Length: 303
Length: 217
Image 1 (cartoon, rainbow over the protein chains, first blue to last red):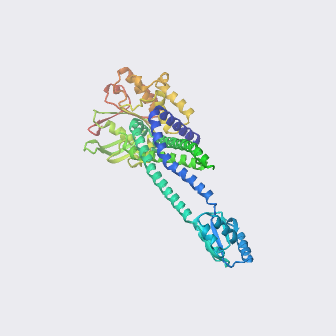
Image 2: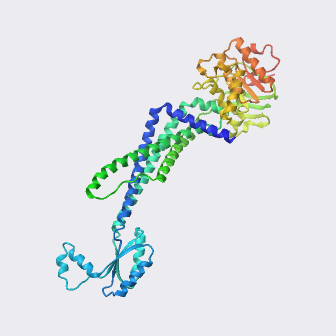
């Protein structure tokens, strides 16, 4: 029974391919349309993923500055150092004594005159702390902890740019979501119409099958297969479009980056994301076909 | 096997095709249904396969009231029946073999069993040599035989034929009637609607005649 069922499905699967091959131009066109529709949100998603990983790398630049009290002594510095070692999320830290800070200030252009005219060093000793996580929530929490240490006068971190980047990524994400939703609906509509036309041309077959005892699921099956297979094909087309796009961008980027002497490359969709894309596109095709079949099949009742 | 009790069928346009029909066909019986066109023969046959639903009355097939059958159960009723349609209902985009295969695909037969059954059915109607031919190239008699092969391939317990000799000449018609008799001899209940009086001249089988939606005695 199970074997017969499998054979039945294999048969329908094979016939769906035959049917796809029998009208290659139409099928290629709709696969292309689906591919382009899917590649838009997926492409933006890929770029955002890349941007995020780049931001992750850059974010390992100074995160938090700890300014000790002006009258901090050697023991105080040691205590802070001890405390920093105990916080597990801290990857690394660097101590900048007040005299080094002053020299740096004197060296930096524009402030030389001011620094030279100072009677005594107004700068405190400071630590620069590098953390594992870069979310503003985490940083804010850490800041509060450090602020409570008695040796610390002031904790500062420049979260503005992280906030801005995160806001931008969030915006990008809702853009992707919006595009994906709209284009998914478009794909479902395309599939709905494709299947509607197929049902019309297969009217006789459906009617006769019903007359000789076909269940609804038997009649539905080839259309659902058709939808899913065309959906997957659309997904593959989208994947190829994105791969080609990234390839072109990377070639341009390589030239540009060479001039600035650093190395960066756009990463393609991960294996997991690729599989998700294919499954999702198959589901979209299936869903469009399912809705279409539900809407049109009942209209064909044998007489 | 097949029982009608007070069965009436009125179409939405007000036309009454059947009016209080009572009928009983025994298992293994062969019965002819006659009457002028429009007398309700086709409607009666379609009611048996639940292609039409009665307006009132009870239709029982093997004890099951099909007047109240749920839509999801209808396919399984139809698989017990072999129906030879007046307008053939062949698929012209498939060859002879594939046309006969359809009922078996629907019932989930595996490929090997199905193929041997299709060939056996085609052999019975002498179409085995034409299994690769498209139906459009068949003659009228051959198409009718193809319909018969498709109706018997899944070995139904009831065989229903609506005007099976409609446009055929006498020799062809006789051949086809002989086929029905041979199916009946192996135990199939056969119900044939015809307005062709010449078919009924020398038959020993029961003849039911319909007149304006009523069964005449």
